[in-house]
Length: 216
Image (cartoon, rainbow, N blue to C red):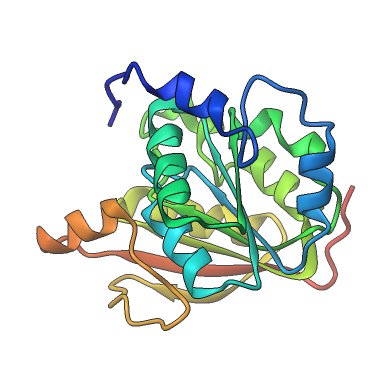
């Protein structure tokens, strides 16, 4: 769902470069210092930020990086972070494919894919965040015991992702076609809340890189 541009978005992001990397080089001290904090979690596609905000509140000793290419969504998330005075979130305004090079190998403990764009047409398969090229990047940045946690309402994307993970060196530790949302280490996204209110089933999986997998 495309967000309408809000005039205040870019000025607000420019005013809060202490929590947002926006139109600046990633090779700076802010990102380097943030990555040095452990544990480190990554969410690809923050939406309006309910998930990353509440996860950061619930886990004050964990640092979170959120990547979002929609400037309006990122600004909404940033505003929530500022209002709540959250110190353990760093946002990056860009497409994730451009960010991988700046995340050190073995730096991420958990990676979250929440209600990602399903890109349903076959010709767009390579854009899905569980396509092989993305999984290869995840292998590099995840720690040896790192996890990928995925939630989606889209059953076709979920089935595709199950096959993609298992075909590319991942072990599926959890596959749930009707996730009840009761995991105490999880919080709802704004999309999840909407879908649950509509009675839509939520799918969830947890994947780890296989122990015999070689990172190339």
